Image 1: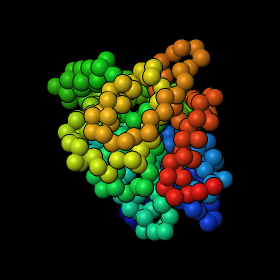
Image 2 (image 1 turned 45 degrees about the vertical axis):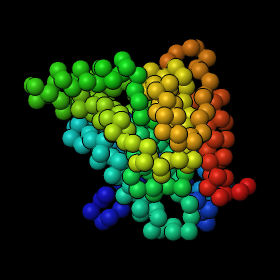
Image 3 (image 1 turned 90 degrees about the vertical axis):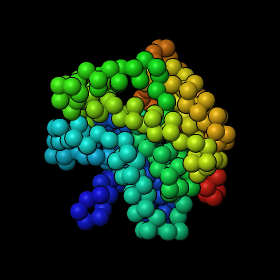
Length: 277
């Protein structure tokens, strides 16, 4: 939260008489305004006012349009990001007490949104875009190895690794071992939850992702929700035409023809929240 109590967010659209409000939460080292611009535009017609939350370490300088160098490594903490989602949702609840709230999260932001929902139930519905609830074994091993190699030398916060996020969407050019380790923190958070602690997710969650995701394991994420019988609506997105493994699923450019599938799923979730056409 800023000193004035305002969440660090950007308005994704303008809706004068909203029927619902949405909080969109970005992934690791991504620029929330860039990745969710299409979402904000698409939510105007159903009259959903949308904000994009800038997690600590990802706040974009309006002059350079990039994050402040070193800020991500200084604030990389999954628990902190989960708390920021919860606090931002509380602000929405106070300002628009009559409107239902939708949480939309991508990757680590999807995991933080789901964790916030499990802890405090601030949303009436949640849509997770490839949420980082469970990584692929290779990704998890690399996160642990990166951190283990850097920490003994005090370099875990040094932004040394070139970012895998494409230029139009990235917040920082390089990423530190402790920032990558937030994926491990997220997975440990969900592994520690029991079914009783996850009841706020039951029947309120939609997950969309490709089977061939190079970061998050679709099989393991789905197994997690099924293990706890959370009645999650699961939608498998078509694979990329070139057959490549892709973790980027958040706008028209990255989704291609699957964009309509995502928006249909979001509309369906809004209807379950009480918004009829």
